[in-house]
Length: 184
Length: 155
Image (cartoon, rainbow over all chains, first blue to last red; front, side, top):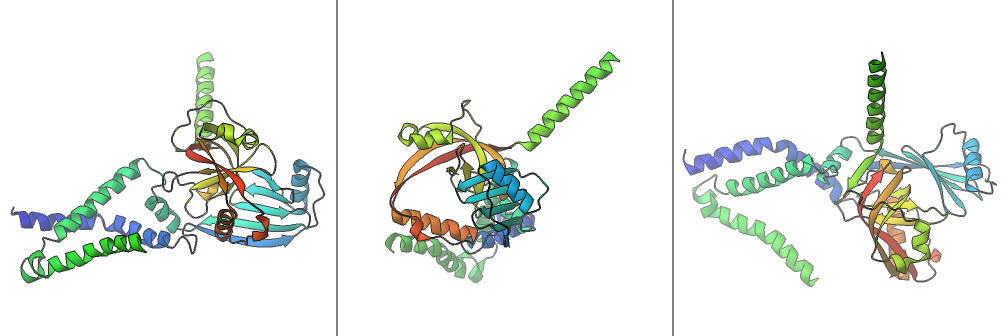
């Protein structure tokens, strides 16, 4: 098999193999890029309810009083007082922030965003282990795709033709941005 | 009969061990210290612990909602928390750990935070939590203590 044919076969078949991973990293990359503007992994909602002010003199008394006034029958995972006027009650996926002097309660619910949460976990390599190996292989495959991609076509539309100019422009994007960050 | 009972006990013990292991979740490097330091002791004498490796235990009262890169642990004393900060991407804590207990290990970092730094941190945190931050709560420089995190066990 001639080298160009091998190159094209590799580009085609590796390309097919990494479609799924490219979608995972592409979609999650878009989501995570804008993490400053929204939470890409979780949907968080807040509800405010009003109960009578809490009068307990210690944490345990305050917890019992809050549970009773909020009509909660379950036992919290934990309870904590970050400051003298606030009581936090933690349940699976839900936190109650009670302002003890006023009785104002903020209920925070946190739920993973369907699909996007899993994609983002993969992008951030949260699980490590095997996923580190798979994402390393994906990175190598991407490098291979870039290199083999340059040699698919010949002539005026190949690397010897306009290809070299497009490669140069593409390479100038990160170099130019790096230079911009140095002098801005 | 005796053999059957022994096997049943062993199976039960294994089941309990598996269940307990499933309830525990490890993040990052394995914990190496055997002694747990009280958060209140660190706050009482930050300079003594600055740069030292410690293991701390407490309830997880807050989690970085964006990237899972820090936890806030409640102290053994009320009104006191300590931040366990990991390098971005090294550990990603899910929000589901909030409210659970954690045993964490890392190096204590002590630094004086200027008013501007405290306001910036407060506003960033408020943005994450979709709440508001009152700048008036910052009255002057304060000593900031955090643990540069390496490993954690959540249970």
